[in-house]
Length: 190
Image 1 (cartoon, rainbow, N blue to C red):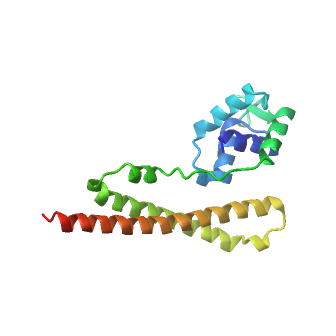
Image 2: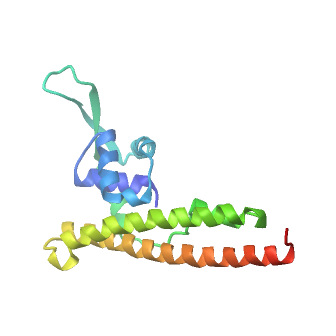
């Protein structure tokens, strides 16, 4: 999924300016790790393709001295484009974790450091999981009354499941790396 679909969806909900859209994207989809600069690239592409247009400039602050902001809104073509994308079949995304690539391209001499890196990432995942789990206690899915509430809870639940799987994979991977390291030490003792 590209950021342009997420940005377009946010604009269909409510027009906005770049920085505000980046904040809304972070609130809604923070786990996906989009860069704020990607919002502006997406806006440029969406505007070029006729899916959004500049609505007006907004001045910030109580006076007219605030910096002007370009407000964007979805065009009818953009709404159709988004709806077509929303209702089209979706293939699962490939896993693109930087640590996975490091492991894939590493040598056996890198095992001690990779073991440390998997442990560090596991700790980060555990911290993220704790924070998301706290959110469950404050708003379980059964307590939602609108689709707006339910969709946010479902996204949070998906993030929790992905973190749980990632933690398990990191533990399994570290176990294999430790076994490989031990075997190499047995073969070539110092």
